[in-house]
Length: 187
Image 1 (cartoon, one colour):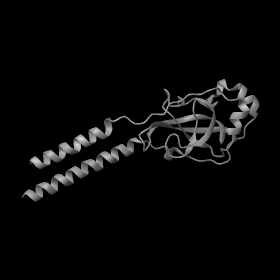
Image 2 (cartoon, one colour):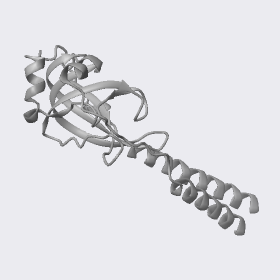
Image 3 (tube, rainbow, N blue to C red):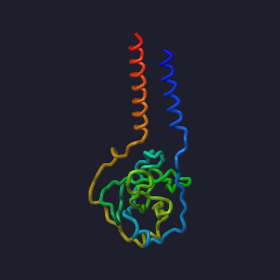
Image 4 (cartoon, rainbow, N blue to C red):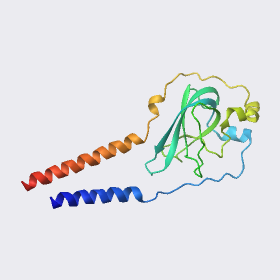
């Protein structure tokens, strides 16, 4: 029984230590807001749309980010589908934009692995803003086109919490197997 307690204590300490050490942090500083023309040129995707869902995610490196699902209204560049998912930070120094579900935005996005896997991202240094405050941009961009391909990306919008639950279940299963083997060995 002492072995079981020792093993459980060892596992508990390991789990505690693995979750308490701080992770690396990214800081964000924007020198100057780019012009509409330069932002359009450097962006891989420019579209307007309504935020359908915002989910928090944790990258493999431990960084927290947000995955934002948009219903696309108009597109000017790089987006043909009726829905698109972009990544952004949490805000507070990591370049993230505080997207609100139900609000309409004009989004400038580019590909980056800043928030984990390579994906479209939009950050506070971009010209992304609520559609109601984007008059200068809309005058330059002109009339956009509607998306040409209807898709439903709701299933692709997955939470990182499911991975935490899977990991927790695996750890519990390993502990039970270890305890079972030790008890069986001691008989």
